Length: 97
Image 1 (cartoon, rainbow, N blue to C red):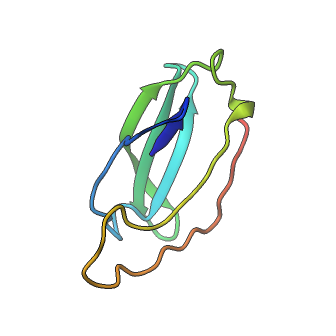
Image 2: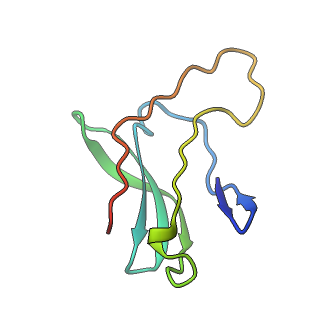
């Protein structure tokens, strides 16, 4: 979910796949001026091929990268009949392009 100007927008929604969604990244594509969300499967302890899940134009003039606040949450968006499990975030890195 993305929040800009007080409004939340769902960017991509899918059932979590333990294998295909092992790695997740958000990056700025300066060539196209977009923010890109990607996932990758595990390949021997490192990300395999990245699969684009969502892309949107990003104006760094309107919202400079140094003004971005990252918040990571884990959970479900609806009531679950059973225990959905747990989420583990590991190796979070916010890097300058």
